[in-house]
Length: 293
Image 1 (spheres, one colour):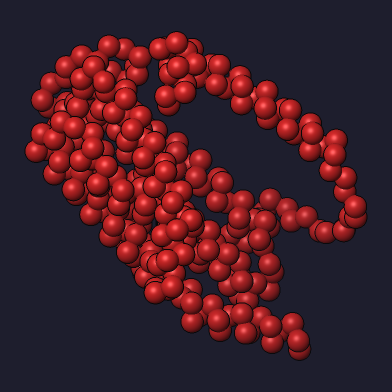
Image 2: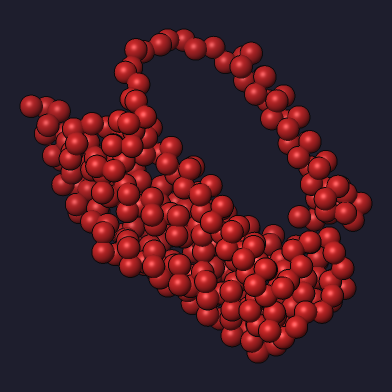
């Protein structure tokens, strides 16, 4: 965000235009380099599934559907907060340095997500199985949101205390991104055992789709919050004071909505997902036996 702000000379709209142009040029450049220098050495004739087969493969795999729904819910919660927190810093926390405070919080959150994926998850994996880590992360995120709500309602005016709940929320989000990929991989083996067809491409392609779906849903929810509580959605407008009702609505929306969505995701996952580590060992053994027969 800070680099975008500087690219535009203080105007985020201009900054995003130049940032998008730079990304587009780099994309074309590196894609061209890849196409020119990478040669396909061999080809294999593979029957491509039809669109109908792709949807049937997903629908017939109840565990894949459970993980897909869980991914949508988790990302909806995180994206809703990400979409609304900038307005909290601008209109609620306010002050002349609100952009700097938002940049600190956003940068901290991104860094925590990366460190959680690289360091915290491998550490937790030494002591817990993947399902227990999932439950710990949901509890961590919900707890972080509760603390964040208490801080917003108690009138905390500095960005630094908010880094504490931000750590638990963003660390949980980072680890959950790793876990859902593992869970999706498990559903591939499960689908092969159940349907006698291995559908990696169909199942893993859904991850990108559902993330975009979650982003769209979160964007709609955020827009409705801004509309209902009469909050100016123009991020470049001057940071003017908003009513107490709007301020309270913003605080509750960016914390309670994610809490509810995460709890729904927790219930769906706990009731429907059955691919524990022990169950996966059984499935792997059964698939190996089937191939040897």
